[in-house]
Image 1 (cartoon, rainbow, N blue to C red):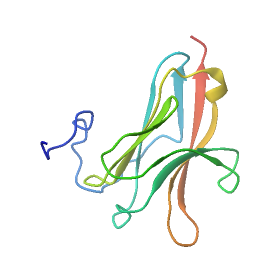
Image 2 (cartoon, one colour):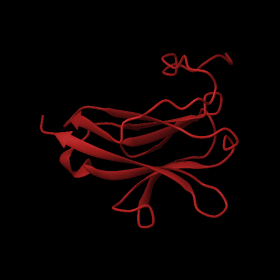
Image 3 (cartoon, rainbow, N blue to C red):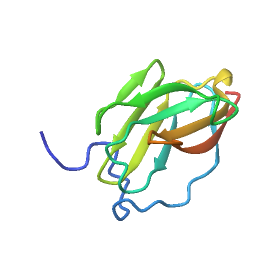
Image 4 (spheres, rainbow, N blue to C red):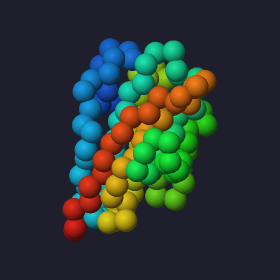
Length: 126
C-alpha cells in the first residue's frame, strides 16, 4: 500500500491540522452528491468522528461514524472518512433528495461534551 495521501485527498495542500474557515450552510442539487470537509483540533486524531442530524446538538441522531482513520465508513447513501494527517473529516452524501435538507452536526467524541460543528444543508430541486 502507498502511504501517501489517499485518492480524493489531493486537494488538501494546507499545513497539517490548520483549520480554514468553512461554510455553515451548503446547498446541493437533488440527485447530486454533497461533500463536506470539517477540520478538528490536533490531539483528537484518535477520537471517534461522526455525523448526526437534528435540530440541536443534544437531540441529533448519528447518521454515520468513522471507526478508524483513512477507512471510508458507509451507511446507506452517507459516508465518512477521517484523515489524521490533516485533522479533517470528509462527509459525503450520494443522490441527495429533499428529505436530506436540515441541520447536521459533525462531531468528535471526547470526555464531557463532544466537539460539534453545525452545518445546514439545503437541497435545490433538480
